Length: 301
Image 1 (cartoon, rainbow, N blue to C red):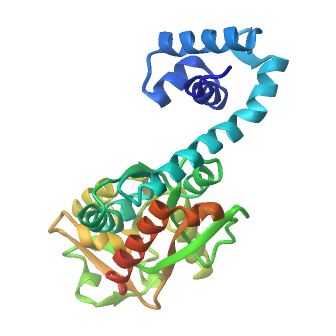
Image 2 (spheres, rainbow, N blue to C red; image 1 turned 30 degrees about the vertical axis):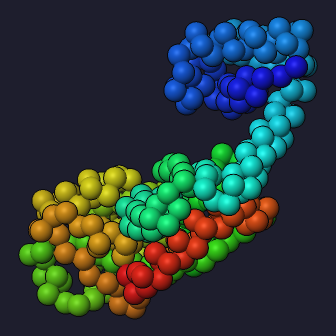
């Protein structure tokens, strides 16, 4: 009765809120989305959407189908994973989500080792910051996510996720190489209270503001960007300094930028998160093992 492709498209239309948004998310044209939804409505024999003004709303039948759509797609994904496992890891697919600095460091090393030993295992990589990346695993949009938490922030992790700790990532301050503090091996955050700052992603920014507040000052945040290369360029031009994860030090691209550790040390926890049942999927377990190895090689960052 149902075509799984149509169910997947229907699920994305509901999530995105419109045919055009779903088309962008899935890489389809809007007419293709429309045709799939018409075919699905013919299959069920009743409309699934109605338009109310400029918005689309689910009919009663659409709401009923949506309650089952996620379960259907999860079951299809689980079946695909199990069939791959039967082949003895000669084939398989793992959908992984990672935050940018992990995507530039831990992930390439892990995937290179994986490709050398198991070339048939395919890893599809997405980029997202927590908490959105954790939601994607909980919602079945990816199989593994790499995320980080800060000890000073009370962050909620979805109950259905299993945490696999990988490493502690020591925070560092990026500053121009000519900065007076650049001659030190480590710097105190309180001594930088009068600096102009460049803040990063939402979670990193929250931790940065929290640590400054603990020391009794409110930093002058002149720029905010999630792009690590933009941060480096701004620092290189002397427009501000930034508190960044130690992983960033392995891909500094500006010779005019120096990284110095904080004293006392400040760290974040980098972990992988999966649904408990995915731990039994051989391809997923293999990728986790390679991530553990890559992280172990970077202890002390």
